[in-house]
Image (tube, rainbow, N blue to C red):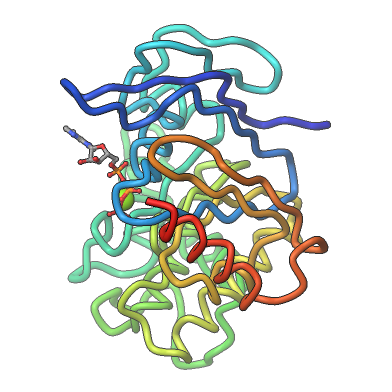
Length: 248
Ligand SMILES: Nc1ncnc2c1ncn2[C@@H]1O[C@H](COP(=O)(O)OP(=O)(O)OP(=O)(O)O)[C@@H](O)[C@H]1O
Ligand SMILES: [Mg+2]
Protein backbone atom coordinates (compact mmCIF):
# COMPACT_ATOMS: atom_id res chain seq x y z
CA UNK A 1 0.00 0.00 0.00
CA UNK A 2 1.18 3.40 -0.93
CA UNK A 3 -0.05 5.54 1.93
CA UNK A 4 0.08 9.29 1.57
CA UNK A 5 -1.46 9.86 4.93
CA UNK A 6 -2.52 7.70 7.82
CA UNK A 7 -4.14 8.34 11.19
CA UNK A 8 -3.61 5.69 13.86
CA UNK A 9 -5.81 5.61 16.93
CA UNK A 10 -6.27 9.35 16.95
CA UNK A 11 -8.35 10.80 19.76
CA UNK A 12 -9.38 14.43 19.81
CA UNK A 13 -11.40 15.95 22.61
CA UNK A 14 -12.96 19.35 22.99
CA UNK A 15 -13.57 19.75 26.69
CA UNK A 16 -15.96 16.93 27.57
CA UNK A 17 -16.70 16.04 23.93
CA UNK A 18 -14.75 13.28 22.25
CA UNK A 19 -14.88 14.33 18.61
CA UNK A 20 -12.54 11.54 17.43
CA UNK A 21 -12.23 8.33 19.38
CA UNK A 22 -9.24 6.13 18.46
CA UNK A 23 -9.82 6.84 14.81
CA UNK A 24 -7.69 5.12 12.21
CA UNK A 25 -7.84 5.75 8.48
CA UNK A 26 -5.62 6.21 5.49
CA UNK A 27 -5.50 7.54 1.95
CA UNK A 28 -3.27 5.88 -0.62
CA UNK A 29 -1.95 7.48 -3.78
CA UNK A 30 -4.30 7.80 -6.71
CA UNK A 31 -7.52 6.96 -4.89
CA UNK A 32 -10.64 8.97 -4.19
CA UNK A 33 -11.89 8.36 -0.66
CA UNK A 34 -15.34 9.52 0.41
CA UNK A 35 -15.62 10.48 4.05
CA UNK A 36 -19.20 10.36 5.26
CA UNK A 37 -21.09 10.58 8.52
CA UNK A 38 -24.00 12.35 10.12
CA UNK A 39 -23.80 15.90 11.49
CA UNK A 40 -21.33 16.00 14.33
CA UNK A 41 -19.79 12.63 13.41
CA UNK A 42 -16.33 14.16 13.41
CA UNK A 43 -15.61 14.64 9.69
CA UNK A 44 -14.37 18.20 9.96
CA UNK A 45 -12.38 17.39 13.07
CA UNK A 46 -10.77 14.51 11.22
CA UNK A 47 -9.68 16.62 8.27
CA UNK A 48 -8.55 19.47 10.49
CA UNK A 49 -6.40 16.99 12.37
CA UNK A 50 -5.03 15.61 9.10
CA UNK A 51 -4.04 19.06 7.91
CA UNK A 52 -2.53 20.25 11.17
CA UNK A 53 -5.25 22.63 12.33
CA UNK A 54 -6.02 20.49 15.40
CA UNK A 55 -3.44 18.67 17.43
CA UNK A 56 -4.54 15.16 18.41
CA UNK A 57 -4.71 14.35 22.12
CA UNK A 58 -3.62 10.80 21.41
CA UNK A 59 -2.51 8.74 18.45
CA UNK A 60 -0.24 9.17 15.48
CA UNK A 61 -0.23 11.04 12.22
CA UNK A 62 1.83 9.20 9.64
CA UNK A 63 2.84 10.85 6.39
CA UNK A 64 4.23 8.59 3.66
CA UNK A 65 5.03 5.98 6.30
CA UNK A 66 6.80 8.38 8.67
CA UNK A 67 5.35 9.39 12.00
CA UNK A 68 5.27 13.17 12.29
CA UNK A 69 5.40 15.33 15.38
CA UNK A 70 4.16 18.87 15.91
CA UNK A 71 2.16 18.64 12.72
CA UNK A 72 1.08 22.06 11.46
CA UNK A 73 -0.99 23.43 8.59
CA UNK A 74 2.20 24.72 6.99
CA UNK A 75 3.93 21.35 7.22
CA UNK A 76 0.86 19.68 5.75
CA UNK A 77 0.95 22.00 2.74
CA UNK A 78 4.67 21.52 2.34
CA UNK A 79 4.00 17.78 2.26
CA UNK A 80 1.61 18.15 -0.64
CA UNK A 81 -1.67 18.09 1.26
CA UNK A 82 -4.04 20.87 0.24
CA UNK A 83 -7.54 21.56 1.50
CA UNK A 84 -10.14 23.25 -0.64
CA UNK A 85 -12.84 24.84 1.45
CA UNK A 86 -16.02 25.92 -0.26
CA UNK A 87 -15.46 29.32 -1.91
CA UNK A 88 -13.83 30.87 1.08
CA UNK A 89 -10.26 31.12 -0.10
CA UNK A 90 -10.84 32.76 -3.48
CA UNK A 91 -10.84 36.44 -4.29
CA UNK A 92 -13.76 37.04 -6.69
CA UNK A 93 -12.65 40.50 -7.84
CA UNK A 94 -9.42 39.03 -9.16
CA UNK A 95 -8.66 36.90 -12.20
CA UNK A 96 -8.21 33.14 -12.25
CA UNK A 97 -4.46 33.53 -12.75
CA UNK A 98 -4.22 35.91 -9.80
CA UNK A 99 -6.06 33.45 -7.60
CA UNK A 100 -3.95 30.49 -8.65
CA UNK A 101 -0.64 32.23 -8.03
CA UNK A 102 -1.71 34.24 -5.00
CA UNK A 103 1.28 34.47 -2.67
CA UNK A 104 3.41 32.21 -4.84
CA UNK A 105 3.97 34.32 -7.93
CA UNK A 106 6.59 33.50 -10.52
CA UNK A 107 9.04 36.38 -10.38
CA UNK A 108 12.10 37.84 -12.02
CA UNK A 109 14.90 39.21 -9.83
CA UNK A 110 13.67 42.28 -7.89
CA UNK A 111 10.25 40.70 -7.63
CA UNK A 112 8.79 41.61 -11.00
CA UNK A 113 6.05 39.15 -11.81
CA UNK A 114 6.43 36.94 -14.87
CA UNK A 115 2.93 37.69 -16.01
CA UNK A 116 2.92 36.01 -19.42
CA UNK A 117 4.33 32.82 -17.98
CA UNK A 118 1.77 32.85 -15.21
CA UNK A 119 -1.05 33.24 -17.70
CA UNK A 120 0.31 30.42 -19.85
CA UNK A 121 0.68 28.16 -16.81
CA UNK A 122 -2.76 29.05 -15.45
CA UNK A 123 -4.35 28.30 -18.83
CA UNK A 124 -2.56 24.96 -18.92
CA UNK A 125 -3.72 24.14 -15.38
CA UNK A 126 -7.37 24.96 -15.93
CA UNK A 127 -7.46 22.99 -19.20
CA UNK A 128 -5.74 20.07 -17.47
CA UNK A 129 -8.39 19.86 -14.81
CA UNK A 130 -11.22 20.15 -17.31
CA UNK A 131 -12.24 23.73 -18.11
CA UNK A 132 -13.49 23.46 -21.67
CA UNK A 133 -15.45 26.66 -22.25
CA UNK A 134 -13.82 28.99 -24.77
CA UNK A 135 -15.35 31.90 -22.86
CA UNK A 136 -13.19 31.27 -19.83
CA UNK A 137 -9.46 31.74 -19.71
CA UNK A 138 -6.82 32.56 -17.12
CA UNK A 139 -7.65 36.26 -17.23
CA UNK A 140 -11.37 35.85 -16.52
CA UNK A 141 -12.45 37.25 -13.17
CA UNK A 142 -13.37 34.57 -10.65
CA UNK A 143 -16.50 36.59 -9.85
CA UNK A 144 -17.90 35.62 -13.28
CA UNK A 145 -17.53 31.90 -12.63
CA UNK A 146 -20.15 29.50 -11.39
CA UNK A 147 -19.80 27.71 -8.06
CA UNK A 148 -18.50 24.53 -9.66
CA UNK A 149 -15.95 26.43 -11.73
CA UNK A 150 -14.72 28.21 -8.60
CA UNK A 151 -14.09 24.83 -7.04
CA UNK A 152 -12.11 24.08 -10.19
CA UNK A 153 -9.95 27.18 -9.72
CA UNK A 154 -9.28 26.18 -6.12
CA UNK A 155 -8.32 22.68 -7.28
CA UNK A 156 -6.05 24.14 -9.99
CA UNK A 157 -4.36 26.23 -7.32
CA UNK A 158 -3.87 23.14 -5.15
CA UNK A 159 -2.24 21.40 -8.10
CA UNK A 160 0.00 24.37 -8.76
CA UNK A 161 1.01 24.13 -5.10
CA UNK A 162 2.11 20.56 -5.86
CA UNK A 163 -0.69 18.86 -4.01
CA UNK A 164 -0.61 15.09 -4.00
CA UNK A 165 -3.66 14.82 -1.79
CA UNK A 166 -6.50 17.28 -2.22
CA UNK A 167 -9.09 17.39 0.52
CA UNK A 168 -12.47 18.72 -0.58
CA UNK A 169 -14.79 19.71 2.23
CA UNK A 170 -18.38 19.61 1.01
CA UNK A 171 -17.43 20.74 -2.52
CA UNK A 172 -20.88 20.17 -4.00
CA UNK A 173 -22.94 21.79 -1.26
CA UNK A 174 -25.24 24.44 -2.64
CA UNK A 175 -24.37 23.55 -6.24
CA UNK A 176 -26.83 22.74 -8.99
CA UNK A 177 -26.77 19.36 -10.68
CA UNK A 178 -24.81 20.76 -13.62
CA UNK A 179 -22.27 22.40 -11.38
CA UNK A 180 -21.91 19.25 -9.33
CA UNK A 181 -21.18 17.36 -12.54
CA UNK A 182 -18.45 19.87 -13.30
CA UNK A 183 -16.83 19.36 -9.91
CA UNK A 184 -16.93 15.60 -10.52
CA UNK A 185 -15.14 16.08 -13.83
CA UNK A 186 -12.47 18.12 -12.07
CA UNK A 187 -12.08 15.46 -9.42
CA UNK A 188 -11.87 12.71 -12.04
CA UNK A 189 -9.12 14.63 -13.80
CA UNK A 190 -7.26 15.01 -10.52
CA UNK A 191 -7.53 11.26 -10.12
CA UNK A 192 -6.26 10.61 -13.64
CA UNK A 193 -3.17 12.63 -12.79
CA UNK A 194 -2.46 10.05 -10.03
CA UNK A 195 -3.21 12.46 -7.23
CA UNK A 196 -5.50 11.48 -4.38
CA UNK A 197 -8.70 13.06 -3.18
CA UNK A 198 -10.45 12.93 0.17
CA UNK A 199 -14.01 13.98 -0.47
CA UNK A 200 -16.29 15.01 2.38
CA UNK A 201 -19.97 15.26 1.60
CA UNK A 202 -23.47 15.09 2.96
CA UNK A 203 -25.02 13.91 -0.26
CA UNK A 204 -24.52 10.16 -0.30
CA UNK A 205 -25.26 9.98 -4.03
CA UNK A 206 -22.51 12.49 -4.81
CA UNK A 207 -20.04 10.71 -2.59
CA UNK A 208 -20.97 7.35 -4.08
CA UNK A 209 -20.48 8.59 -7.63
CA UNK A 210 -17.04 9.99 -7.15
CA UNK A 211 -15.35 7.69 -4.62
CA UNK A 212 -13.40 4.45 -4.94
CA UNK A 213 -13.76 3.78 -1.26
CA UNK A 214 -15.89 5.02 1.65
CA UNK A 215 -14.98 5.73 5.24
CA UNK A 216 -17.98 6.09 7.50
CA UNK A 217 -17.64 7.97 10.75
CA UNK A 218 -20.09 7.78 13.61
CA UNK A 219 -19.61 9.64 16.86
CA UNK A 220 -15.91 10.00 16.21
CA UNK A 221 -15.35 6.36 15.31
CA UNK A 222 -14.73 4.73 11.96
CA UNK A 223 -17.59 2.25 11.80
CA UNK A 224 -17.17 1.10 8.19
CA UNK A 225 -14.52 1.15 5.51
CA UNK A 226 -15.98 -0.09 2.26
CA UNK A 227 -14.73 -0.47 -1.26
CA UNK A 228 -17.12 0.72 -3.89
CA UNK A 229 -17.12 -2.69 -5.52
CA UNK A 230 -18.61 -4.09 -2.29
CA UNK A 231 -21.48 -1.58 -2.23
CA UNK A 232 -23.58 -2.24 -5.30
CA UNK A 233 -25.54 1.03 -5.38
CA UNK A 234 -25.86 4.42 -3.70
CA UNK A 235 -29.13 3.16 -2.21
CA UNK A 236 -27.17 0.44 -0.41
CA UNK A 237 -24.81 3.05 0.98
CA UNK A 238 -27.77 5.17 2.03
CA UNK A 239 -29.24 2.16 3.82
CA UNK A 240 -25.99 1.62 5.74
CA UNK A 241 -26.05 5.28 6.79
CA UNK A 242 -29.70 5.06 7.87
CA UNK A 243 -29.04 1.96 9.94
CA UNK A 244 -26.27 3.80 11.77
CA UNK A 245 -28.50 6.78 12.57
CA UNK A 246 -31.37 4.51 13.64
CA UNK A 247 -29.15 2.78 16.15
CA UNK A 248 -28.63 6.02 18.09
N1 LIG B 1 -13.69 23.67 18.06
C1 LIG B 1 -14.58 22.92 18.71
N2 LIG B 1 -14.88 23.13 20.01
C2 LIG B 1 -15.76 22.34 20.66
N3 LIG B 1 -16.39 21.30 20.11
C3 LIG B 1 -16.15 21.04 18.82
C4 LIG B 1 -15.23 21.82 18.05
N4 LIG B 1 -15.19 21.32 16.80
C5 LIG B 1 -16.03 20.26 16.78
N5 LIG B 1 -16.60 20.09 17.99
C6 LIG B 1 -17.56 19.02 18.36
O1 LIG B 1 -17.01 17.79 17.94
C7 LIG B 1 -18.00 16.95 17.35
C8 LIG B 1 -17.62 16.63 15.91
O2 LIG B 1 -17.77 17.80 15.15
P1 LIG B 1 -17.35 17.93 13.62
O3 LIG B 1 -17.49 19.35 13.25
O4 LIG B 1 -16.03 17.31 13.41
O5 LIG B 1 -18.48 17.05 12.92
P2 LIG B 1 -18.84 16.94 11.37
O6 LIG B 1 -18.93 15.49 11.06
O7 LIG B 1 -17.92 17.75 10.55
O8 LIG B 1 -20.31 17.55 11.32
P3 LIG B 1 -21.07 18.37 10.14
O9 LIG B 1 -21.56 17.34 9.21
O10 LIG B 1 -22.18 19.01 10.85
O11 LIG B 1 -20.11 19.32 9.54
C9 LIG B 1 -19.31 17.70 17.50
O12 LIG B 1 -19.95 17.25 18.67
C10 LIG B 1 -18.88 19.14 17.62
O13 LIG B 1 -19.81 19.88 18.36
MG1 LIG C 1 -18.17 19.41 9.28
